[in-house]
Length: 298
Image (tube, rainbow, N blue to C red; front, side, top):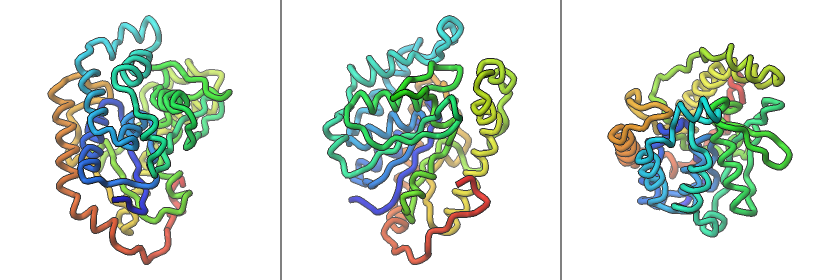
């Protein structure tokens, strides 16, 4: 069941357990989309969805929460890396639970992964992956949080977390002229992002990258503006939003097994509850022209 609509997945680290639940329900209902845009942790789990590997994301979550040192402040101090990126992307996601790249490549979907160019501060979107290693490198780059993980060198550019330049990557879907969008968020309705308290630290660490400093300083504004744009799209019946009803009792670096399991169940149940309305949204005929709000950052 493929619909002429775009699917956008927000990142959010371990909060994406909610998104895993949503996507598992989509796979159970054989719901597919021709375009899927995402960034950060959403890129890792989105690739499993494209490849139709129903159990892979849950297996990744299980393995992450069972390994106590995958998130380590000691490692952050010693190696400037909070998450064990080599373990996640080389051992866990490549050896233990490898992506079926053949199924991924044969899927009738374009997978769009956002990254951030650390030298220009601009978002870079990737949608062509001829080899599995290309895809893994781009996903790793998109998941590499500033300060908390090393940058990734890819095709002559230094890349980091796609959520820095474009925290809610709806723009590449709008650019393709799609008139309907399904949005999966990992923040609850009404969430407003606040300015970072680490701007002084970013200014010190990235002192030779003024555009990146500016981007990090203003990231909360861009996030909130984009969220308002999505709300406007929803009111015009151009977007269907699935998100937690209540603030999540879990953080980006959550390691509590019960909280992560609860997040997964929340996502699955929320998708199930909203599925009839989602079907109606996807199947109705779009009669109004695509509207881009001039006040938005698009």
